[in-house]
Length: 268
Image (cartoon, one colour):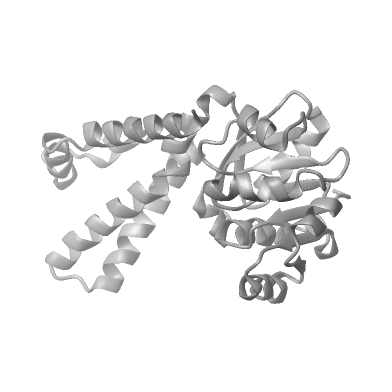
């Protein structure tokens, strides 16, 4: 890709994205620019990835063909107000904040502008992110491909309709937190039964990683994969019965629906 990619925000997500792009050789280091007021974060990014850095948001906005707003949702109005008249002609704005609809972002810019709304997640930090992508009608198919390629450089990406973005928040954007809680609970149980803490985390986390890979690579229904582990009268079905009794499925479903509802409220 022969384009300049800019980031406003040098936090974990911004750096994860920049790192994925650099490691995949999608564009050269010289074609990546990151802006932030935090000079410490910028220096870290520069040392680690060899990219250009600046404390001036407008410098990134003026030079980027694709500009990623990798800041917290509450900072969007402030950041956009400062750059809206400096964005490169024909440039694409990529938003990664929960609850920021395409129309709302356009209104903050005060004009029609190319925008791609994306919901990534934190596993991008280890090259295993999942991103949902939704462009407005000004973005061409080729430009969408460019944005998709950015997010596929540190994980997987899928096109979705904007009406599904709040669901994406609950099933992908926020869900690593639920998985971490599950891993922590598994490890706590192992520690209770005598396993050292470090080993417990390793066994639990690898089991989750391997199970997820089985779902993705075999194409089998999760229920069928679960049945393969459950021998008649065995240890696994005993644990499954307890999880059903305690309402694991209903708790997850309720939590995710609450998450979706909260995202919908933030979009208003």
